[in-house]
Length: 319
Ligand code: 5GP
Ligand code: MN
Image 1 (cartoon, rainbow, N blue to C red):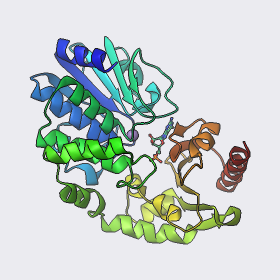
Image 2 (cartoon, rainbow, N blue to C red; image 1 turned 120 degrees about the vertical axis):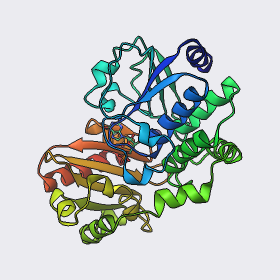
Image 3 (cartoon, rainbow, N blue to C red; image 1 turned 135 degrees about the horizontal axis):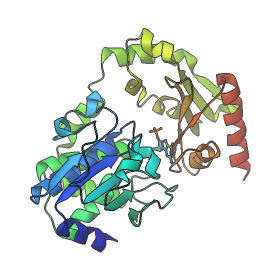
């Protein structure tokens, strides 16, 4: 598949690049890393995302060129769909994007449905960014400092700052190659992790009292309502990283962030330690992800949602 993707990149001239809604560092870093590679080869490339770029990723080179209205697709020969296990994760333009003559999916989710004929999918990969590095190596390309910065960000963020179970030798070797190519680890980490807005920290202060520890200390959770977001003058993206707090508690094996969406549903972000599989739990509710990081959206009353989730966790643990 690497060979086929390299050939398609070599053969065509006009590319669209997109990723999932509610952007994270891997989605953005992979898109922009690929964008710099393609434009560096003299190709035309457009990065389209439904959602705006979260503030802490606006330092990524090229992020100011991302478009949020899908342009006419007539000239597009190849559309890359990155970090998506299902086509629908792209958002409301999914069906238009799917009409591009050639689609290429590069992804690392276990739950990938194989929606695309040309798909490079490896659940063992730490991140989509690491997989783009494989394309780069396969094609014998050199990364520019811009591409290296973006791809390093992708690997850094999807491994939780090189801490999660997916922090493999492959992830670290790819990251080291990117540092050799001009990525600056200290500068990048500072932009991602040390540029919080006061509103985010105000929101965190309002959310910390919702900490709940259940199931004999093994499940920790936080809850964020739309009301709390509004009262703190914060944005929905400001909840990123909150799920890591219950996970940091000794004995907690599963951490959950219940975040109310504008439509009243709840988005659950789940994280786990070791062999505890939260992807299975997310899948019960129509979501997915990875063994140690998964998410889903659930409709209903919050106490009822929490009861159903704990039940699903018990069922999953027993299987
Ligand atoms: P997060 O909690 O950071 O939003 O998501 C955790 C992981 O689950 C990420 O790898 C993300 O791509 C994946 N994920 C989030 N929502 C969904 C979903 O609705 N379906 C699937 N298959 N994966 C999801
Ligand atoms: Mn990813």
